[in-house]
Length: 276
Image 1 (cartoon, rainbow, N blue to C red):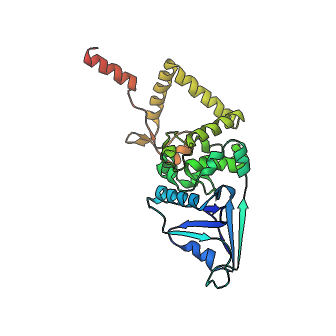
Image 2 (image 1 turned 180 degrees about the horizontal axis):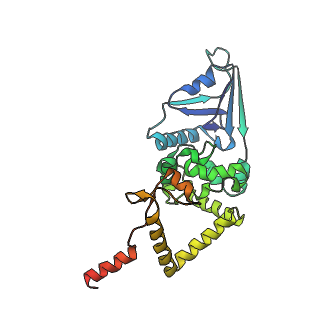
Image 3 (image 1 turned 30 degrees about the horizontal axis):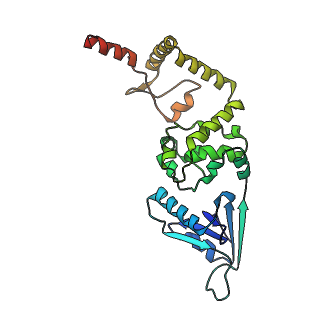
């Protein structure tokens, strides 16, 4: 038995499409006596023209090719007189929460054709890598949206919607124009309504918000932070160890020391030098 996924399933002809650059998909679809294709319901497209259009979009957005090297089409078992092909072909259409995602208003995320363009453009993904998004095959911005949705409970992957700078690069490069920043903001709103964050996190965020809204408090906190970072171990302008609860950060990354003079102090000094 050969088992494969599916890039596109054409409703017009009952054809399963596999996009590869190595040709290994044909070994799965042609050599075994029984071939089983597992396709999410969002992979179904109406016509052959739709499949070809998306094939071109996926190839260009993923690797810069006009089209991939192989585009394998399977429309059924081997017919009498055919030299190869499976004796049986079965297609399994998988929902696995996709209807629920559509009902909750996140159906745009299911338009993804898995080209990876958003991953290539995402500055957060370039820093943290794919393993940070969990066991799901979806990484990067699209993974930050789909992983919590497929899990059913947003709180089980509550960190992912916040793992984004919302710079919009993913939306700009997406060939099917998925508005990923909007979906991430919607997920954040849902998490806030569900009070998915811990009490300590909510207190910390209220303190940060209050500090950013009050210039005098902001200046006092900045002076305290400069004084603290000068006492912590490190070199070349960076701190190599942070106390709990920030210790996990310094285990794998360095933290820049706060500058001796703030931007406001530098700006005021500039004005004095200019005589203004």
